Image 1 (cartoon, rainbow, N blue to C red):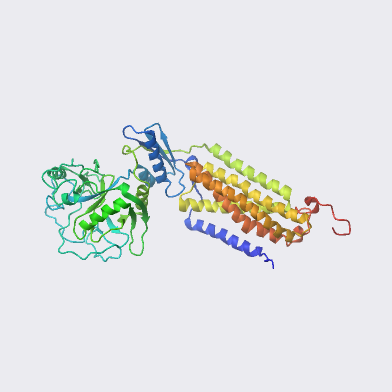
Image 2 (spheres, rainbow, N blue to C red):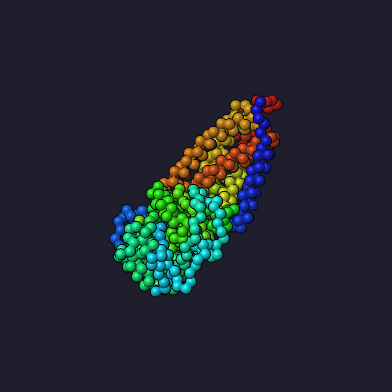
Length: 565
């Protein structure tokens, strides 16, 4: 027994979904989509490469920067190279300081052991022979003063004072028993590069021994170093093969060992939102095999001591935590006083790797105007509206009463498309550029094709002598498969173009794919139910001259006077 259609129910569900989409727009409080660089202007950053670089390495850096900027969605940033020295980044929007910092960041992360730390002025203290520096007169003997590496699930005591960031394990590997009396904890510090002498103390190339007895050259450099007083990061040369004196974010100096783990040993990084166990944002890190083995060795050596393992990003210490548990599986996280923007920016930079070349610090940043004049944009929108009106007029002239269904479907599709564009702009960073508008206009033809196929199938069935109600259902079965195949091809083309294209072409592909999906939604849950509903009325099912389904319109002989066909 054939299933009886219920067009009224389908239409109610469809309009509830449409109302829900606009309800979400109202909740977001944004009623206009974000515009691309060509329509509203934005920010231009000009990165200047240091020294002579090859074209291949410059192109590689361009690709990494583009991935960073577009990593959170379809931001449609334009990233290009100029000559063999410049990478130009143009970001839509009036003020995108978060993306500016992401672009400028070199993201060179290294992990080093802490040998000493003190206040950020020259001659403020030393940690020779102790493995940990102190500030004279202000020792800190509490075990909770430093951030700690803690396996998940292990109980911890409340800290007396928090460091900016903490080192913790994602999964509990092993929890050792507490050790005896803890050694005094060092204070947080700051600082520059030491030159890497070995002297008669610990060998620089054996960091786990060196931190307990640093060489004289490194201690001298630590004594003489001063941190910037204006809160800016210290200007240091971060050579992974030499000890390092640098600053942390609070302006104190630290003496660090040679790099034990490089940022390239990271297999992945992602932002972790607050959860039931933590109210702070964090960044999850996964090390590769080599990084996991080295980290496990360090974890065994430092566990249940007050020795610290520092995370150094672009020459600045962002955390120097202690460890009270083993991390053997290479899964850990950076937690602390992150904002969501800071966590997203850091994880994005680490996820897409360090730049293969160095750029000059403080690159020029300028605001740019729209690249398209207002009359060009107006001309494009006018052309789109004219095309839409012509499609409507043609369908109205050719299909008559059924042409009203085409017009209603196009208007509903336009309303749903606008809601989706606004929601994606707010939720995923989608920006509407002129190529994106072109993609939406091209999709009008795809939508009209679906209606034409469906209506022609109905007319074919009625030419075979079937009533409109039967013709609608029989024609739908045949038209549905044809339209699904056509839209699948369009959607596949949009996906391929989006994956392999770059810049604003991605916007065209994204808009084309979005419109194709909306065409299917409108075709299945609006157009077909409306036609099924209209088939119940004599105006259509008896073939009124203005219905578009009269015998004359169908190309059939008129009925004999006083009889039936």
